Length: 289
Image (cartoon, rainbow, N blue to C red; front, side, top):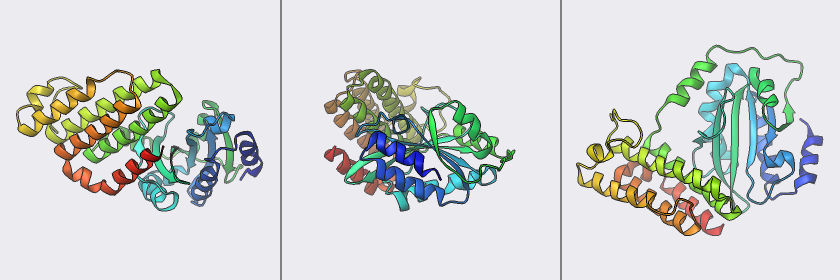
């Protein structure tokens, strides 16, 4: 474990998130499956601000990769204060692993923890293609062998369509990302994330009301969804959601979050019920931001 590197990062940044970084580091490296831990992003480069996320590359022994992924949500929730299950990150580049974004209640604030979990056999390749600082290596002399089961597992996981609950989580996480962009004045990134936000709302409606749809994207929504009273109401909300200013503001985001939760409650009430405490915690922290 490279405490010298960690101390250097702390001296360069002194962010509020540093305690969270240390706690996450201790939690992740306690697992014997974790072989490497790299810090990347603004914490690694010394440019962090109070809104910066804690961003890790987590190397996991190839033989333990699927099992580690299966317990990751429970681990973050129980030991790190995660308020939602992780959103499988569809924005991060493909580096042979799986990315997850967690929202964590830490020191009275909502913080973002990004975990890119990669097979140990590919850590060196990932390190070459990303700005990151290694802070933990379990055994520098070990050459980890690829496991042929990992690539098919990653491929299947990426290809799995999101459930209604997962799509609701996606909207909440992207809503938080948009909140940070708005605060920082990053209107172009906020614009791109608003499109992801609206698309996730559309995908939730389709997953709930037209799960066997043969049409791609936004095609044939009225024909497939608008034939029932619930479908008509969902489409009205969706139309209102996409009709606001293309660049979100704090006000339009707040209304948009209310609207997507209302859409989910109408189209997939069981998903909202299963996440009700998490949604309440999410709203509480956003109001403090």
